[in-house]
Length: 391
Length: 189
Ligand SMILES: NC(=O)c1ccc[n+]([C@@H]2O[C@H](COP(=O)([O-])OP(=O)(O)OC[C@H]3O[C@@H](n4cnc5c(N)ncnc54)[C@H](O)[C@@H]3O)[C@@H](O)[C@H]2O)c1
Ligand SMILES: [Zn+2]
Ligand SMILES: [Zn+2]
Image 1 (cartoon, rainbow over the protein chains, first blue to last red):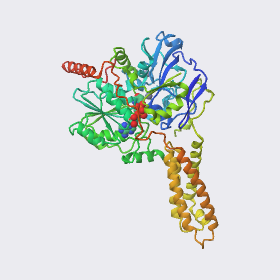
Image 2: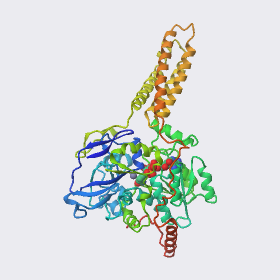
Image 3: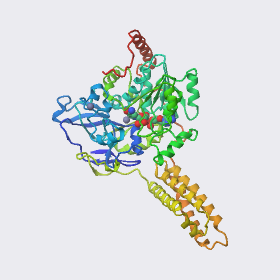
Image 4: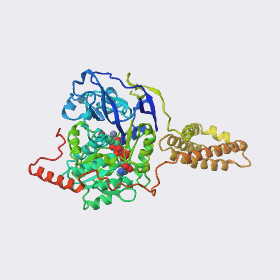
């Protein structure tokens, strides 16, 4: 089959690889009908997240049709079912899964000795991601083996196009969880850093959850225009002062809730000297992340407020203003998304026509063009916001 | 100690049968070569500055050579990173400094001026490569004033944003009455 394969830094190719096979009784194989490129894939493209091996298959936003099931799938799935695959592989049985903390499932990371050492504890296995999270082959491919398939799936009905359902795999629940973690109250201002696909979903989620005001921050006009369309007031951090504008928009009090949808690769610019220093330190491996957004959020967030982090951080971040964080009594909530915790509710909202997540798609191309699209998406060329690939 | 190099792929996962074309251009290879060259030269300059000054008949300038070594190493690391363009421009600037330093040593009484001339020639050649690589690896991000498509009609709310806002407010008001906090993180469907 064809698949997008990681060969090294900035080197992803569309290779021919062997077809996946059932390896365990709880496996299923799907024929992929749509998949997408995520901002997290860019961290891997740049080799900023350790633990990739040349030959790893990329992709964790995937849906398709079940073509084969193992004997242990227990009638939960059958051939012909249409499923969206959550990017977190879950067993459905461990303590964490029972609590709904699916992204920290204790069972599914088959390389948990690595995660135990690096993070202190293992987290769930993830598709198409580093070997720290199991090194499972990803779904930017014609076929995908879904481990623990009896639990790791979202069944979706016929009659709704792929484009509306695909993002249940990751970015829609991710934006949703980021907003839910904020405990939004009807008087709240929610400020959202980053208007990439995750930020766009967080904006819509904050509106659906009844925020009084949503403020979105980015520097790309096309993404800011999409944020505005979704109901946000926008700030362009290249041409305006984020701190001043946020103060203005909140009568000098600061937003009650702040959401990070940027992560470890915050934009580097001369007018933000901390980003230059972070970048330099990253190059000599003295720091792994560029936490500019975290610093800014802690500084502007209203005392007693909540900071919700959806953006991915991989290792060590320097110079976080813990003094401000502690004295202002802030709360921080984070995490890879517990996808299946939210998807029943979100699927219903899609079916009811409350929201149509396909608004974010700007490019749909055949899988073979995937490698070029990694560059287009990374360079923000051609007003690209979200790329869908069709095997 | 834990080493990422100990990671191996799990048996049974798909294997590559035939590799597709790489996005890497010849200029990426050139940038890589220049990056490693930079680091190599930097290490020599940093750890053996005396060798360098003796060869060039410029004894007494060891500190400068050391500093240049640090510069070469940093520019090299940058040229090997995703920000290779910045690294290559740093190298072009460094070539200028190298040339200026060499020229300052090109005095009639320097017995090694032949070596200096040779070094200048080398710096010139490398500078041309650096410049070409820097030109050809320009980031392909669109310039800030580039015309862009805007998406003012993509609200994502088929029923319109106002109807969503009204509904959300009603639910919130209702939830307020029942003192159920909306979006409790422990609520599992
Ligand atoms: N927690 C999860 O489960 C989860 C799931 C999916 C993605 N993610 C992470 O979410 C992040 C965003 O993903 P995406 O797909 O939207 O990626 P993206 O790269 O398309 O979007 C990032 C956006 O942030 C903007 N940005 C950069 N620096 C900024 C700054 N200083 N202030 C404001 N905006 C800034 C960029 O211009 C860009 O539009 C990534 O880190 C990704 O790994 C997390
Ligand atoms: Zn993702
Ligand atoms: Zn589990």
